[in-house]
Image 1 (tube, one colour):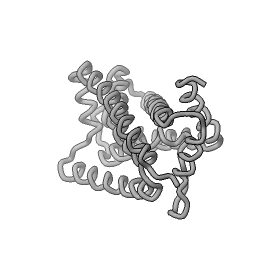
Image 2: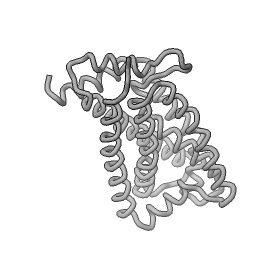
Image 3: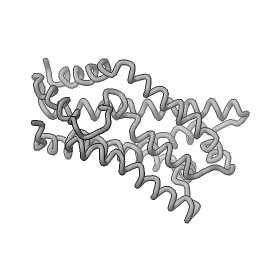
Length: 238
């Protein structure tokens, strides 16, 4: 088995093992689109919208959607499911960096597909309401939003592969609470909406925003690979 064949094996093995859980990936995209398409419509058409709802749901959901395929589920501290999976992976004739490549590639691609599906469903909803959209600006808005959320995805992966199951769960519980506090603060105090400002920016400087988004995605991916690769080698999985 060649180097990249090993990476590809891990990717497809995780997707196959997820089975019915892959349906959760589709359900959560549809759920997010259903509860936020009117808010996104408000951003695009300059109407009134809930800045907290759109910012929180989109950033939070996009950050975890890439993790849902092949991800570990469960609550409690009695059993370290992450270590069990790492032990299995290490028992295979593959290298640690192949494990990291596989997990990063899977979450990057599935997360991107989730954002594409979400924006497609939202566009359908807006069109059904009789409104037209600037497809270029709308697509670029999705790319920029994905780039920002991908930073949080990389943080999840760092805790998933490099930390104990307890620390991973603590991060998974604390992060949404912190995110709620931050978004509530700026949306109520300063009447600010991150996604609204992103849409304004992509209209004013599309090339700059496209370049910045791509650079952020690539930089986050490479930095995450380096940090996770170093951390997972030091992790005790006994």
